[in-house]
Length: 176
Length: 219
Image (cartoon, rainbow over all chains, first blue to last red; front, side, top):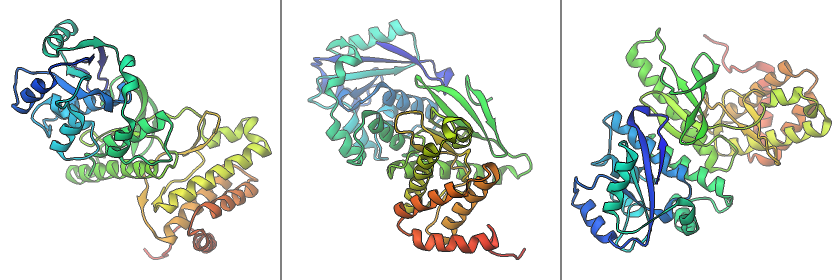
């Protein structure tokens, strides 16, 4: 697990991100999310749509900012992180695309605030899988799907430019 | 101060610009501040409109593959735009270096500027404040020109607006860099090949040169 500061919203504390592979209980976790189980206090993201840690950190920063302003569009800050990853304002579609599905085997768990050791314990207890590092997940990025969701111009091929395009679309979705 | 751990690098009449850490990177944070002389309700409305307008123009350019800073996050409530920090000198600074004074370098800059402006006008974005300080040279192999500061930009398909955009740059060029008429001609030549409606716009530019930036002499 890695922990990062949220520079734009320092009072929110650190954001903790852990990557898991070989996950066995994705469908049970998805059911708990859909039932809005308040005891499940971590965000769960489909890892193959995360190109770079920066993408997830920007989504978390926006969620922390909107929580402070009392302007969350979803029912929890964790769901908001998943929603922020998507370029559209359709909540159900965003959660379906960027959240976990029944067939998910590798995912990223994310949580804002709290003490690192306690958060990791909670994550390990919740997710039935093997803790790994982001660099070991990276090969699994599903670029074709990302290109489709973000309507990325075919002329954009460089990884850094693809990431820029994604971040730009995420930033603009709530700017009307 | 609204920007956490930010270092102030520029202060203008409309905004303050900081360099601040953002999600593990260094970013530019542009803060539009409240104007005490305006009614608070009006001020809030104008400021938030300008913040969204600037972000929208930047994003419109990015989607058209024009080199502009990537918008990372927009905080409308605090009037902040977080964006990519570009590593490089402004065209103004670059032209004063030994490397930037050579004929070859200047031809390259002129071509790059003309191409960038042509592409920008193709998607109907009018920059509104083109100067050599608002054009950066990206510090990489391609040395591409990056358009920055879209604080006065807007979307318009009028030939008039685009011609005035070029005229503003021409005036900025001749006042900051004497004896660069040839270079500006090169910019216009490159603009002519990349902008679809360039013929009409360049014709209009002749007209604007004779009368100045403002169309009407009334009021």
